[in-house]
Amino acid sequence: MMKSFILSLLFLISFSKFEYRDSGSSAVLPVSRISEIKKFIKGKDYNQDLAIFINFKIHSGKYRYFVYDLKNNKILQKAIVAHGDGSVVKNSFALKFSNIDGSHQSSLGKYEIRESYSGKFGKAYRLDGLDETNSNARSRAIVLHSYYCIPDQESSNPACLSFGCPMLSRKAFNETSKLISQSKKTIILYAFY
Image (cartoon, rainbow, N blue to C red; front, side, top):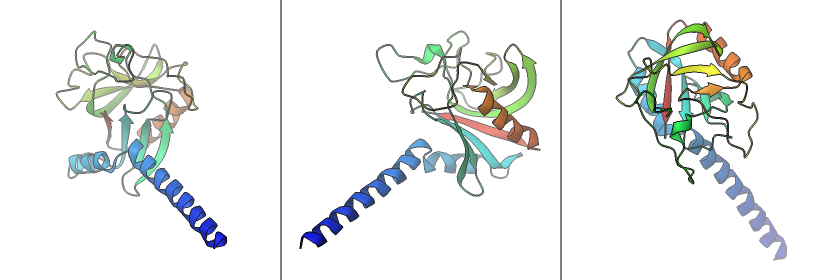
């Protein structure tokens, strides 16, 4: 009797751990967002194999930037990414977003990752916003770049803040940059909340 009780208890514990892990992975990158991008790029002149996602619902000290293999449905790269200092809501974990120049807020929506250039942060990629929520990205100089204060490892501390740009660590940026450079077609970046 006791033996079967212990076995049942172990089964329940292992099942709940499995269920938790599974729900956690879909929570970081919801299937609905992946499906949305697959539908958006289908039949268009975009890279059909790769997309980049930023889930701003996740704490900034945790991995919330994902390079995703759309063909094999798996995450290829995870990284910490900054949001704009204007997106911070005082005394709250919530974030706010804007498309207005000078707001220093991050913008939500789909972006085309465009040409690279060398600027004050080294190599960076210009971003063209494709939605009403981020259509001013180029005029606001919202670009994908690296910055020294972004860590490679997750922690409970928040990441440093940008003026609205998605900033990565140097290592994470270099990893992403290789994939962008190898791509013959434009890659979509999708920031959501």
